[in-house]
Amino acid sequence: MRVTLSVLCLSAFPAFGFVNKGNSSSRSTASTLTMGILDSILGGLGLPRNNYPDPCVMGDESIMSKKAHGTSETPVQSNLRWNCDQKTADNICNFNRHYAEYRGYWESTTFLEEEAATAEITFYDSNTGKPLFVAPRGRSMLDFIKETKSHGWPSFRDSEVIWDDVRVLPGGEAVSTDGTHLGHNLPDAMGNRYCINLVSVAGRPLDDKESD
Image 1 (cartoon, rainbow, N blue to C red):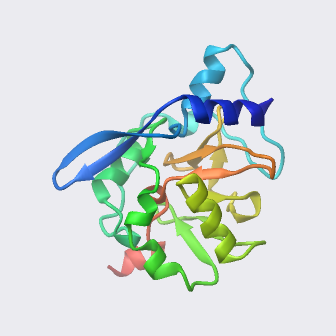
Image 2 (cartoon, rainbow, N blue to C red; image 1 turned 120 degrees about the vertical axis):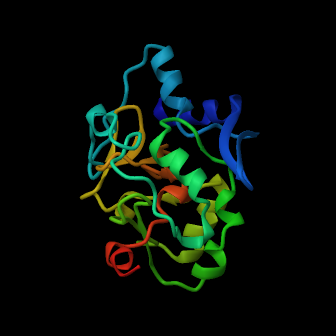
Image 3 (cartoon, rainbow, N blue to C red; image 1 turned 180 degrees about the vertical axis):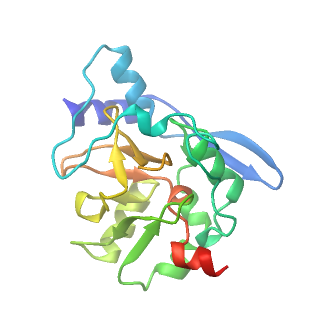
């Protein structure tokens, strides 16, 4: 039922993404479902929310309680990797629970240019600099890029998640333990698939931040 609902919903509803052009910020529509609409649909239908199987680590709503800066204690870093837009990142990471960067945003950054030849990439929280994902693991970089292109957002599997600092809420929202909105878990026939905003995981590691 979970997979069937995901497929049906993805084809039936529009998406909204945060876009920043110059100094202005707006929302743009896209042809695919916003990560998070599935959560609202399940609630509206009165269907139970999910408890995802191991190794997925579940969290609760208290993680996303109001803090000093939206759902986090601090804004995003000022020097995000891959030329990701700081304002867009701050909106999505700290003042948002349902919306996403637009589909394919990651291809508008320098990600592919910088990382295509990298064997394994560590993705850091854009707020805190803590490591959240490492990819590819258990597959090639070509496979990781192919799946990411297919869905429009960086897509991680269970073995690529650093569970010390990542949680999934019962509605499927993926968050960091510090309150950063990351994206959503949208399982498919292969298992859990963590559909993540690049702007949420474009941080620099803690030692890099300290040396700036």
